[in-house]
Length: 434
Image (cartoon, rainbow, N blue to C red; front, side, top):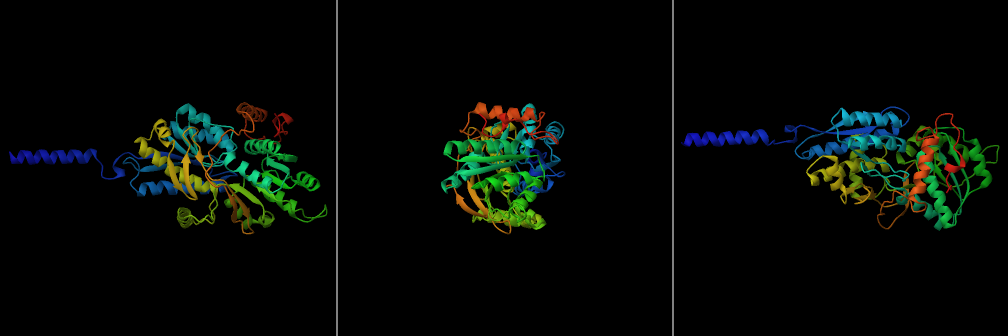
């Protein structure tokens, strides 16, 4: 009898051991997609986002994984082009067994991927600041909305006496919509747009725009120039020459972050020409915050990186925010995670962030920084409290924002940027249009 009882107990123990794993590796791994550009013109900018995401996944696994499972990243390459991001996202969701993807950087990538996630019921965590005018039930936006960085920064300059603004941007969706918001804000607040120009993406033909700025002498340049246009633009603007010498009109930058600025400074002398300019953001590497100090030190040790930017910090934090939502939901299914993420918080580098219960964007603190000669950004102003995200700016109706976005998209031949050789769109789509 005792022998039979012993055998029964032993059998029960073996059965429990078989179905109750002692470590996360005993259950099938949990795949997540990491989708950034590894090739193309944005590869250098997106590499640290990929690195920060991988580091966060490693940290989760070091603490036992999620729901008894190891988290395994499946890396994919968006190749710096929106439609290729969409194809890569489709493959992750339909062939790789992935339900959640962390990725996207340029607005063209995000907007191109959204229909894929909505069609297949996947979930995208997107870390970059963006132009607003959008919400999706399948996206958690962990970068800032314009009212959390653009609007407060412009107001700071208005409060300090600037009234005449020149708007300049690359001709794609982010600058167009962002500067449309600035235009509307200035109109409402008594400022004036004395000029505005849009240059083809990565264009280096900046002479005409620089000449206009020198002639108009605005109080401030609001720049949404991206990529390879920045160096020739600011070099020509600030360099003395036969056409009248150097003009030191300050600029507020809505695109470049610490990674790009410091890389630019080490590659060429162009960095010296943006020293003294300003950057609107939510995070700077130098923030005196214990969690931030630990994060920056670990990231640099892990990857040998010299710089950490706003978007890098968001790419890291959003993985941990997702993990918290998964644990609270007890599930990795997107619909369950979406319900759980509402109201969730995480002690991110630079401060605690909160996910809004209605629009799945994060509450964040606005910051304004000044660029130093070495590319470091020193904070000169911060909002007193975190700001609730507003995907649609109140300066125009939702219908007006949707109409502007639609006009740009169809005017560019169903693309999110001006096509090579394509003409600038009509006045109907320019900032300030009703």
